[in-house]
Image (cartoon, rainbow, N blue to C red; front, top):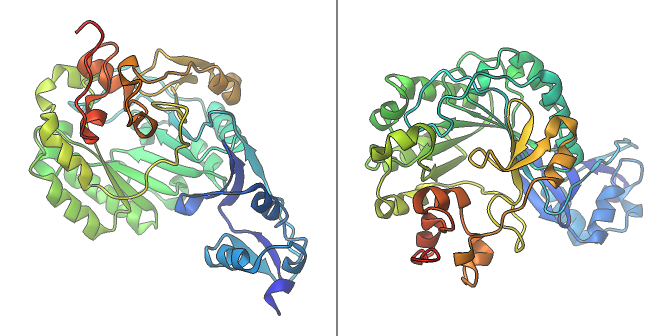
Length: 391
């Protein structure tokens, strides 16, 4: 049968979204394609009811779609509705959902400190999943606490199956080993590893490095994309190059390194803060995909929000007093009600602002005080942080 006689549908995990512009998203690969209105209309018609010969696609464009695995051609009509997620401006692309405040560790650098125990109700979790998909979100990030300590985990995770977004589990890895695949219906599992054994165990407790590595290996055996997040601290500076080699050999798909904010328990253990000048080059060791951000208008966290275990939508895990509302009453309304924050006034006029966005506003506040820019973002761009007003 000729290619043009085939009936195309979007490939599994591929969906259409209206963010700031029309897009096609491949969730299993975490790839976002910006589209013209003409291309968006073409994909809308790829519902398995019409042959390619009637869809008026240029040959080069059609070959690209097939080679990228965006379309599946069928020899017979194969009706599959094309769903479109419609977002807001700015678009909510990344939703962190804290399903529990419980944790099986007491890490020295935990920014949450010692919150009271609370667990998200399964019906709220399911509603968030449904609404995030309707809004065309990209990454639904399940975190905590330690999310695998949620006492009704098996009631949460079925909601994540066959969705139009990428699902990500953020875990310390200690409870992964032995979990069956049906309890891990995630595209990606992100494990926290804060150095090699000595550096990691200093923060998280003796034996935790080996157990986290075992959990990471189990996730890889289940066929999951595995990423690793690492906090750069004063006890792991000499271990990070070796950690990178280990993760590369294991097949980890992405590695991000972060400079921490002295909040929660880290505020009581400030000796763990590495000198910024020593940490800077080490932050560049990582690899893998970054966030799909829109350009221009918004600063720190413009496309991200966090839902607490009780259902409150907040700006992020740090700015918990910046509240949009009760996500249980409606995620879209809570997102629209979330106050927007621009960059510090000291950043206005900086030529790096369009790409930097002011960096992490909370890091600027924690390390420099009110009105201060993020010193890490400034130094990463070869600039000296400007002084606050009055200094």
